[in-house]
Every structure is written in C-alpha cells, then in structure tokens.
Amino acid sequence: MEFKDYYKTLGVERSADQKAISKAFRRLAREHHPDVNRAKGAEDRFKEVNEAYQVLGDPAKRSRYDQMHEAYQRGGVDWQQIFRGTGQTPPGGFTVVGDVGDLEEILGGLGGFSDFFSQFFGGAAAPGQARGRRRRGRGGRTAVEEMMGGAPAPAAEANLEVTLEEVYHGASKPVTLQLNGTSRRLDITVPKGVRSGQRIRLPGALDGGDLYLTVQVLPHPQFIRQGDDVMVEMSVALTDALLGAEMQVPTLEGNVSMTIPSESQNGRTFRLRGLGMPRPDGSRGDQLVRLKVVLPTSLSDEERRFFEQMRKQRRANRD
Image 1 (cartoon, one colour):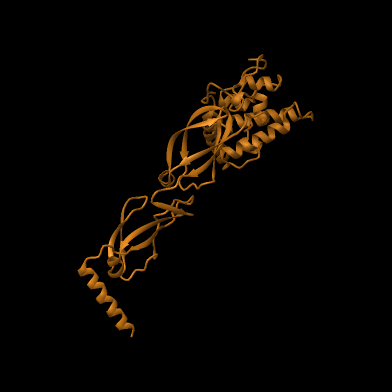
Image 2: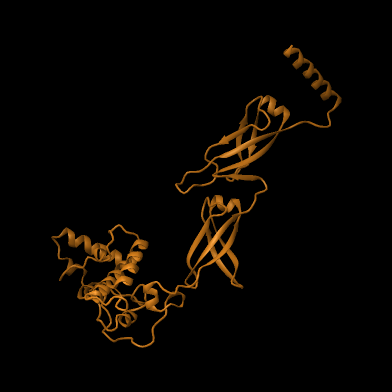
C-alpha cells in the first residue's frame, strides 16, 4: 500500500505546530473547495487536504502517524503489519467539521477516505451516510462556513483590571464582564509581566467568537512600575542616611535586607537586581529603591544643642 505523506499534502514541515497546520488546511480547503473551484482534479485535491487534516489536526492521530512515518522512512520493518487496524476513529470524527457524515455531505457524495486512512485510522462512512440537515459547528457556523472560514461569530472587546501582584506572579482569576448588554463570567489567565494597554486574545471564548481584553494595571499604593522595573520610595532617618544603616525593603517577593552606605543623599536610588517584573524570555527587571531622607522634628533642647554644635563645626571645616 502506498504511504500517504500528509505533511507534504498540506505543504508543512513535520515540526509545524497546530496553528501552522490549521492555517495551511484552511487555505488549501478554500482554494480547492468544489463550490469555488471547478478545475479538473480540484475535488480530489480537496479530499486529500481534508484527509490530511483529519490526521494531523488531531494530536492523538498525529502522534500515531508520526510513529508510522518514522518506521516507513527507516525501513527494515513491516510498518503496515505493525500499525494496521489498531487505530480507531473517536466519536466526533472529522476534526473541524464535526463528523464523517458532515464531510461526506460537504463533498457532495465524492466518496470516502483513502484505503490508507481506512486501514490505519479507523475508516470512514460510506458515501451517502448521514445526509440531510447540516450540522452546525462552533459559533453556529455550518460545516462549509467552518471550513471556508466565513461567517465567524463577531469578536468582542472589554477591559481587564488587574493588580500589580497578579501581573508579577501571574494569576488565574474569575472575571465577570458586561458584553453586549449581558453579563458573562470567564476564567482569565493573567500573563506574567503584561503591561497596561496590551491586549489578551481569547480565541473562541464567546460562542466561537474571539474576545480581546485590554489590560489595565491598577495603581499600587506602594510600588510604581517603570517598564520592567519596580520603584519603591523608602523613608530614612537623617541619622541613618548620615551614618549608614541596614534596612528592610519591601518587594513583590517579600521584604529583603539592604545596606545604606554612610552619607547617602536624599533621592539616591539603589538597584536590586532581578526583583522587578517578569519578561517573556524568563528574565526579570530590577527593583529600584529611592531614599527619602526625613528630617527630625520636635527637637529636644539637647538635640538642638547637638545640631548647633555640628553646624559650627561644619562652618569651621569650610573655613
């Protein structure tokens, strides 16, 4: 029996992901669909494209097919004997349009799957089976609309408010959104490091239609985000700024210890590496710590005499 190279049929590499396979299938299905292409051989090509996607578009079937493909290319073994008859088509059949009956209807009685598919992936319905009313796929589309990419459910947009902690750690949170006058509850995954103004796309989340969420990161009472860095302002006593001190600094990971060197000026900024916002490549920004030197108030007589003495001493040193 002739081995079917389904990757070649769809024009994709074996390393192609599911998105690339789906994209190639839809392009070829639109190109060769018998309703739009009357050229000789278009119908046969359309069937080949659908059969290839029936296998490569299903992760379980694709895994089995890849094993067959490797055995066929390696040679030295009877791959037909090893794999024949052990693959059953799961209920639901055709990956995109719903089931084998739908496929037969779309093909207009052009025939079933090839012998290769029948032997190794469970077979197909006989021509004419399951005729009549067309099933409707995701978003209320008919099988033809599904395959041709037409009449999709409309996309919707909404705002998503998240906290800085949720952005830092990533989160899965239930959100109730007002969409087209109705209330919808969805479980949303907040990507780590996402920024205000960026959009999250949830394909097919609304009855087959896509949902686009524009992220709004809420202001934090303590931290200020600056790109991938996080700024925090720390109040420091005058004596600690002059003499140096060890202090506890809040971060989004919890408190960390930081040493302030002596004679630290008001507004001086320190950088704590790797304690900022996550980046897509797995690295992180930094935590910035800006000092705010707080002058003492309500001085006692002894403190006032001390600072008077210090002022005299500083003036003498300048002279």
